[in-house]
Image 1 (cartoon, rainbow, N blue to C red):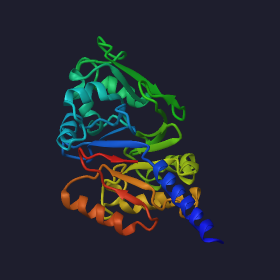
Image 2: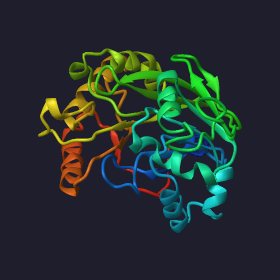
Image 3: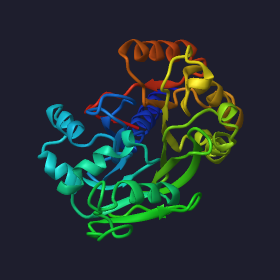
Image 4: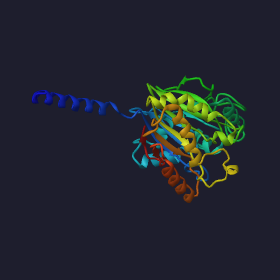
Length: 319
């Protein structure tokens, strides 16, 4: 090969490498408004996610809203008021289950909110209508249910396994069932934008404890997306360290059970398919010593090469 041809080959390789780097951009941006499970009412499960280069966010669960938005503003994630983030940036809420640590922010902030859609499965929606937005516990800001609905929120029931568009965004969603102290239901949401996906799991116990096949079925549904690298990340809870006895898990995961489940996913998606895959750990329960122990155990047991993310309230990251 002549010197000139070698020079041309080098230029071509550099150009291709630059093109590859330019095209490998983030698909979603995430702003955690609340990251813990348990007693900290200012920092409970809620994650804003939007397509990159838009402010069309949805909130995955809504345990904490206002305090998280204020934290994000202090961190320069948002350059507008907390009212504008709440009223204009958040296009809808996806509620995985009706436990208060996943809905209290939605309830409390509803009086200051704007018209938008609340999405949940039928059972979860009925619980919210009967116990919260019922004109007794709280004003019914929805368009259905007890009392005199104010019709500010549209309550949209999700059919399991059916993909639907998310109003006022370019995204779609598909819901999958989870078991959270069987037979109590929780939900996983598979979010799609263009050809990219993100998966959010509400509270869930491992199949072996829950006597369920919900996680196994979910892994089968997403395995091809993992293999093709279209699934950009997965939010999944780990509430307790490994020392927590099975009878006191109350429908939650430990690092041991997390890794057992992810090994099942790798068996379906292919050996090595989870290397570098982003796992966002949610719902860590206080006290602080337990949270530190959970983080240490997950890092130590990460034999799949996962990219583990421990989100911080008000600090944006990208998928």
